[in-house]
Length: 171
Image 1 (cartoon, rainbow, N blue to C red):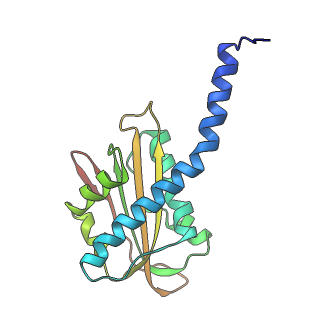
Image 2 (image 1 turned 45 degrees about the vertical axis):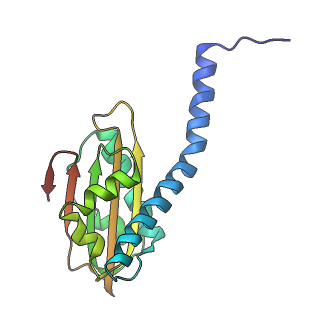
Image 3 (image 1 turned 30 degrees about the vertical axis):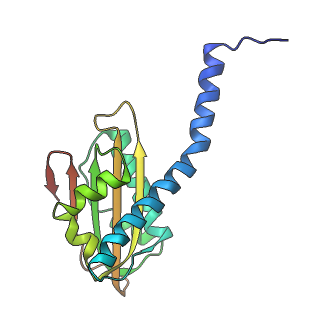
């Protein structure tokens, strides 16, 4: 017996499929960006970055906020990072929007001042976030949060750069 599905039912099924696919898509994005960044670090004789669960949670939230608000402004979420228990003294954040793949955004960052963060020998940890919103201006949003240095109660250095396909904003 054939059943007709209403547009609402089709929409709900599509939403469920999209939602269940997001974690695996985000995991693939994270793995790809980490691998690409570490390839560049290896080429420049730097130790590989280690993926931090705490920094990745914050980076993912930051990417999602950027996508939902369609806004690239904001500060390094130091309070959110501290709330996760991550306590190293040096932090940095780079973010971009509009690039369609991890390879494109890493290539772009390596041709900008963000390259300094990716290759910084003082950074040992990284958190990576990726978000997609087809209704937003840039659709694709990318965040890397770097950490390193000595473990301390407070963070002593922060740096933030936001990049889009055509412009760079330092905050």
